[in-house]
Image (cartoon, rainbow, N blue to C red; front, top):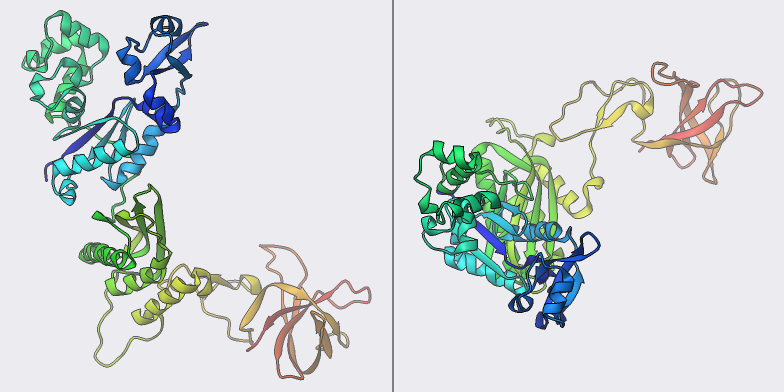
Amino acid sequence: MAHRFISIWFRSLRTDWFCRRQPALKVVAFALSVPDHRRKVITAVNTLAEKQGIHPGMVVADAKALYPNLQVLDDQPEMPARVLQALAEWCIRYSPVVAVDVPDGLILDASGCAHLWGGEEKYMDAIKSRLAAFGYQVQVAIADTIGAAWGFARYGNTSFLDLPAQALRLERATVEQLFHLGLHYIRDFCSMPRSALRRRFGELILKRLDQAFGTTKEILQPVVPVEPWQERLPCLEPIVTATGIAIAVQKLLDCLCKRLLEEGKGLRIAVLSAFRIDSKVVKIEIGTNRASHNTAHLFKLFEIKLSSIEPALGIELFVLEAKQVEDVEAPQATLWESSFGLENNAVAELLDRITGKMGMACVKRYLPDAHYWPERSFKPALSLEEKAATTWYMDRPRPLELLPKPEPIEVTAPIPDYPPMSFRYRGVFHKVIKADGPERIEQEWWLQEGQHRDYYVVEDEEGKRYWLFRSGHYDAAKTYGWYLHGFFA
């Protein structure tokens, strides 16, 4: 596929930006200025001021003498870069690759984009009309190279050889040298010997010629890095209905999942961005517990959240990005056995729907960890596929629910190692009917220092079972303490 690039030139970027902030300036002649050696120098003028003979570089006092009604505003030197960055991010709706072209332009990689708008002319008209609606005067051109598009946008859409020398993005001194030698147009010197051009004008003129004619590739630096797993769906008419949004998501998933399937990949995290006409972007995100390219399942996850997308005046572009992608291992088919547990995709998809409705924090999986200390004897699993490096401790009973931090309790217990007769937890008195223990667990001295714990499994009069421990040895000074650490089912 041949590359096509669009150059957007903002003819009056600074003054247009001021007019957007102060609409009254549209009907008056005004200029922008900055202080320079105890005087003010004009940096930009609008069209009405230009017609009065005012131009950048003039001293404000001279301009006022020439046209007394001229309004002069303080320029903001950092403004153009900031505005171009914002405009470049907005233009992502027209191409995934948009770069800032300082000091007054943008470059879009339009390869494979124009047909979505019905052709290149309609594509460029759409860009121009939207920017004009924002109040910016722009000239737009498209070509096979960045250099050619840049020249056409600023000096007319004619034959490239008929463009003036400055259309090659040369330094001003080089252009003046060319003019002094009678070389006004690109056709006048493009066929001259390269050694002669290099010797007289330097290396830049050869580089610009090569870039313009496509013999040297020019790399764009996009304002937003392009995601490798991304699908885009521009809308010829703004989408305002829930049905239209659902159809758009279905089409995007069909395209993305087809690519993932061909590559043996599946997505774990995906983000849908809806670009609205009012320049706002609405995003929703889904996640899966196992990499998946099942279109129907992924659509159900998005369907849960589609109601949160407010289309307002309409959505003109949908972008679906797979933020995290992993390999998908095809399950081995068996004749006599069925896949149960976490290996079953139906279980993973059920977990996806639960977490999609209730949040990722509502479903957790834990694996055993090689530690004796109860708080460190388990760890969260990173995925459903992660395997345990050790086995669960099964020699003694362990509670189904372990408190993240042991809570102190009041205990009545005989001495020295008998189980408690009763305890009070959060103001509620519990009489112990049955008990088992103690089970002593020592501190892991290579990790931390402290007292050992003597654990007891106790059952109260209601049949509820608890995991209690005494921290340290019993002594008359009561340097020990009693704690509740978990609950059995």
